[in-house]
Image (cartoon, rainbow, N blue to C red):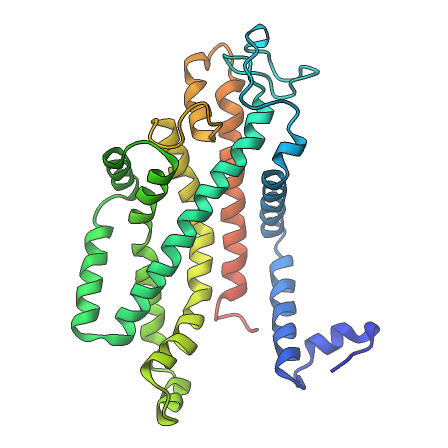
Length: 304
């Protein structure tokens, strides 16, 4: 269905869509308007868009080689003509290291989410949909994993596996999936009693089709919102592992390691540790603001 350009808004907001495509576009537009109505959420989204762009084109915009050591320029304060954010103990440009480190920090966080969200969603929906001994077994395993503090368990696994980016991803992933499984199970228990699920069964839909065609997609929105909110915690965990030397190894410009490397000169050269710490704070805040906005958009208590 084609709509005149001047009537796009009416076409999107109509209560009687003429096609599934129109209904989908209308739903997406309503959700965007609700999201855009929250300035803090838009601010968080803007920060993340800037971060993604910077991470994507980092080598093109970094003013210096992030690994280059110039001992004659060591510990220059912020505001220097050639080093806007100053330099560290080895004369490396902090701005360039922040730009290069954004790719590493964001990549680790995204890898963790890509691993834990499908695992948690699969375990939670399978447990809630199957019930019985399968539900009990999967949820008892989840309870055991939830009984340990996440950061302590991540540190234990990281120490056992050894330092490194891949090992840090594995360690964080092992500890991060249980909340998603719990959430997906709760959503599944609510959905299996819905009328459209009973109708699908009466029409002869198989258990596998009901699970994959209806339950999993409908649980995904809540899990994605939870993942967005958890990204801040994941980034802090990544930074914590890097701070303790269990994440990315030197000379890699990972933000947590940059904070750790600047703690010995914190009183005399505050910028070496403070500027990477502010970057971690801003990105964590941005994910929290974005998650709050997405939660309001996908909240079933709001109309679509």
